[in-house]
Length: 324
Picture 1 (cartoon, rainbow, N blue to C red):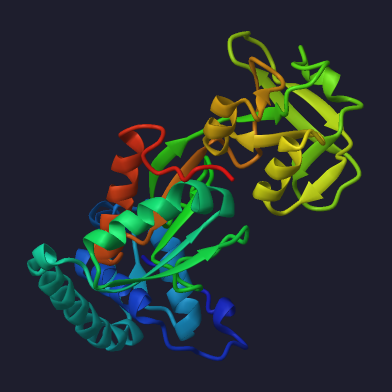
Picture 2: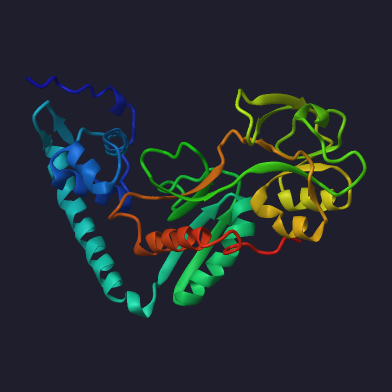
């Protein structure tokens, strides 16, 4: 026998209307008949489906599904919402079919893209120019920011994020792996042999205000635990381009992703100041493209992710702009 669901999470909440994405997601879950089947169809985990449903129920202020070990049914409120959600889903599905039919003529509409600045400015921007040249009717809205934007809440179609742990309610596609190393202009005393030697060096750090930072280093070939080294930055900035410019003028050692420095290394403006050692950022060492669930993300979003993934896989210089 199914236990009556608690309604405590709905108390003292003013109901709100779910947006079109939430309604379409609800329609697809209702049509699937179970969270497990919906998860398979949408390319998400069952836990992610459950969280999305809970968020919609909280917004509505009512239970939408009756849950038991054998079946998933709709409550009266769920049946009322399902009629509206099916209409939204059918309209969106018709629009997607029309879009797929016209793909030969190019994508159109507006595509909202966000990225961390370092990837967006160095690797993504030239690829976006190439992608838009293929689809001149497509309008791009770009937000390069350190803030982690939510696809639904911030109305974003594609988010390029540095992470090893993407959110479970998004479709995550790895597009680029990178390493962070220490770079500096050639001078006496460089390169260094060990992260301990960073003590006393003028360090240029992409970070928020801090007196000291604990940086984790790992050797490329030696096995063992990472080495953690506390350092005192000489310069802190929220823009990597500025720090690289300072480093080129011989004013310190900068920690930067390898994708940002190939031209500087080739021209001899910078060298690897700590050969064989890489710094592991807390977020991880890869860029992932995040979109909404399959069948909900716009066609242009999936097309852009595939384009960026394939272009970057073609070679290290496929999407890079020259460093300045």
